[in-house]
Image (tube, rainbow, N blue to C red):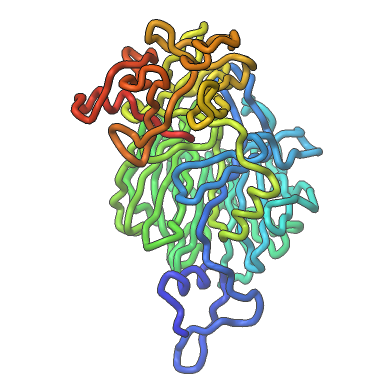
Amino acid sequence: MPLSRREFHRLAALGTLTAAAGGAAVLGAPPAALAADSAYVFGYFKETPNQSGDSYALHLAVSTDGLNWRPLNQNNPVATPTAGTLGLRDPFILRKRDGTFVVLATDLRGRIFTENNQYLHVWDSTDLRGFTGYRRIRMHGLATHTWAPTAFWVASRNQYAIVYSANNGADVFMVNYTSDFRTVSANQVYHSPGFPVLDADVVVDGSTFYMYYKNLADGLIYGARSSTGAPRSYTDYTGGLRQGGAIEAPMLVRNNTGSGWRLWGDSFSPVNNDYYAWSTSNVGGNAWTPLHQRDYTPPLNAKHGSIVGITSAEYDGLVSRWGLPAWVRLKSYNFPDRYVRHAGGIARIDAYPFDPHQDQLWRMVPGLADPAGVSFASINLPGRFLRHSDYAIRLDTDDGTATFRADATFTRVAGLADPTWSSWRSHNFPDRYLRHSGYVLRIDPLSAASSAADRQDATFRIS
């Protein structure tokens, strides 16, 4: 059966195609073709504004659509360095040619960026359900850092390239080549365009190498490409991208279906929004469209990571091994940077990130007054539930009365503004729905005839 165009490029990027007689593309010797990717895994570390949620270790989240992410292992680490600084930043997950994975990461704990380090953390993994062979590899002998690695297969060299940020008198990208992620070639400059650069991500698509990175001179994300992937061979073709006040750490991701691509950018600071995203149907066309924050939900507290496609079997294996969260967040439809949280006993929507970040985490339990409904139990204040009192939503302790149970019970219905989202009808005032007004939650009478703004106020995504 002929290979599809998508599978052709996918296998070419893995280096598994060789030329047959007559120029036809056929599968070469091992590795064998892999099953088609149908989901995604996101590797990252964590930070929060007051550092209470910081975790300089490897975390994983999964997604079936590549947009909305659910942390694994209750957003606890799945691997932690045991050497060097005992912390990591900027983890990068690469699927190797044999179908297994390698994880690379910056050897740095915390937010002090003056420390020089010549090493990267490395783990091997068959399926991301376990991590073995932990080691550090020395990338250079310079008095500088080794930040934000990316790695990819270079068929012309029959080796992998490891590209990272360093400084040899200027902020540049360095490269070392390797066959086994244990020994590496001597470092050399990979890209130095005449202005300082940071955070490269390189993806090979067919015969073209695409590199997205941050230009430190103007704070924008640039795109460059090369037909060989060789050092100093890239030409910029995207003039600069940014959403929000500051952005870095681009992640270039090929969609599992179709020919589309997404580009993610991490906010510069943990006190700002965590991620922004763009999409395009043609990665080489210099036409990126910003995605609305309503369309995606990054992993909770995630910072500077990487995204890779996985198969449905790998997705199921990760969920089985690590588990999905025992909690949910409720994201506002018309203020998608805001989440339902409690503060001083009052329920409201606030722009994330904030601390304590646990104020936005809820256990959805069978309704206290009707198990067909739902009650929202606080994660960090056990025994307390969202309930209405004089139509205002509060976080109160269950007093065991029938009135409390009814006030704390809601019925989930299709979102009043968008049926793919959710709205919540009061159990004991069934003409009233949970909504925000002035960012504070309450229950008000709503119907299909209500204004669009009112219906949007009453629509939330479970994430």
